[in-house]
Structures are given as structure tokens and as C-alpha cells.
Length: 315
Image (cartoon, rainbow, N blue to C red):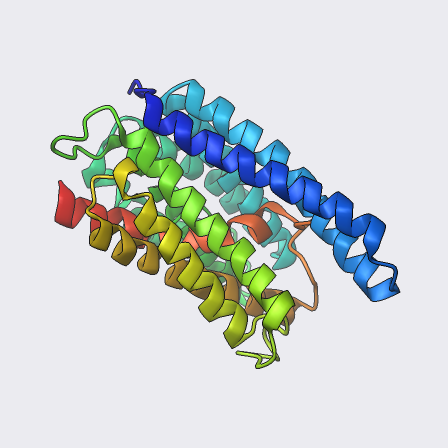
């Protein structure tokens, strides 16, 4: 599909670039002002995150500029890399290698092909039904029964969270929303913006006021102050951006709340997996952020919920 670029999307882009510019200036100012060793480590991490955000925003803008297909390819690539990180972190056996070949090079591209062609009927059941049945069958054919259920569950879970859930984000581009034709690019931008802003704001509020930990054994840096402050701020921003969506201000606030809450749960669950495997990050691809999965963990849980809420109530 061809995306329509108007003044509203340029305001959205301009707002994001302005925030990045402000963050860059503040980061450099703090780098010169903060002298303590702990403070310097925090500032170095903050500046690395900001630098990475410039790159990620540029890539996302480029994908949006190409239209719907560019965005589908971008999210497909992110799913591929995230699944690779997930499978690397949860090792399988030689008996699973042919199954993984099918998962990476057939099922994942097919899922995004269904998104791009707006084949909703198969898009929503390909992985949870057909891939769910195919994966254990293909592994069983190799004859390796050691820890079979555990190995199969890892592959199925990785496929669901890294591919199926994430694919709902570009799926927003193909929803037929009355009175919003050709403007779905703004809806995808809105979703990604709120999900990522909530992560950033929870980090900032937590570093500033965080005292009471939510789940110290799962994610020591997540605090109630960070969660409530970040969610409230992101919901306020989401409500203020209602003009870029098919929602009213109150509806936009509600949808933002759903995005931020599900994003938080995604981050918490994916942190639990990292703690189980004894690692801090899923990878090292993105400086300051870790791996791809570390950056899109909130999108994994928020995308399908936001997609189906929008499809059910607004199409």
C-alpha cells in the first residue's frame, strides 16, 4: 500500500527529532557536569542509547518513506534477528537444525508475506496453528527424543513472540479504518512512538525517583515509581497525539494505556528469560540497548493487543 504523507506525519517526525536533539544536548551537558564514577557510567549509557536512537529513528523513517512494503521488510528483518538471538540464548540440539531452517527461511518470510498481502485469515493462524503442529512433527522425524518437549517449546515460543506477535505492528498499515484511508502510517508511527517512549520514560523516572522495586529478582531496575511515572507520562502524550489517529482524545488515552501496560509486561517477561539464562542482554547489536530483542520486547506484547483492539473497534 502507498502511505500518505501530510502535515500531521511531519509534525510527528519533527517532534521525535526535537526530542532526540534535546536528549543529545542534555546528555553532552551532563557528561561535562557529572564527575562521580557511578554518574559517569549512567551518562555514558544514556548517551550511547541516544546515539543508537538517532540511527534507529533514521532506519524507521526510511522504511516508512518507501511505503508499506518497506515497513514490512524492516519488521521482518527485526523478527529474524530477534528470533536468532532468542534461539542462541536457548540452545537447541542438532536434531532441531532442519526444523530451525524451516522456521527461519520459510515460516518467518511467509508470515510477513501474508501481512504484506493483507491475507488476514491465514496471517492470524499460520503460526499458532500450522507452525505449532509442524515444528514438533519436523523435529520428531529426526529421531532425537532427548528433552524433546523442552526443545520444541523453545522453538514454538520464540516463533510466537519474535515473529507472530511482532508481525502485528506492520499489520496496522493494512487495516481498513473508515475515514482514515491512506493514513495508517501515522497509526504505526503512533504505536511505535508510545511503546518506545514508555520504555524511555520508565527508565528516566526510575533513575530519578525509583525506590520500590516491582520484581527485584526478575528486573532490578524496574520500580513502581518508574512504572507509574513512565506510563502516566506516555499516556498523556498519547492522548495529546489523538489528532494523528482515528481515535478521540479519551480513546487515544485508553489505547496508549493498553500499549504501555502490555509493553511493560513484555519487558518483564523477556527479562525473566534473560535471568533464567544468566545474561544481561539478548545481544550486543545495538550500542547502549543490547540486542534487537532488548529493544523490541515491549512491542512483542503490545503489538497484537493494539492491533486487535483497533481492528475490533475501529474497522
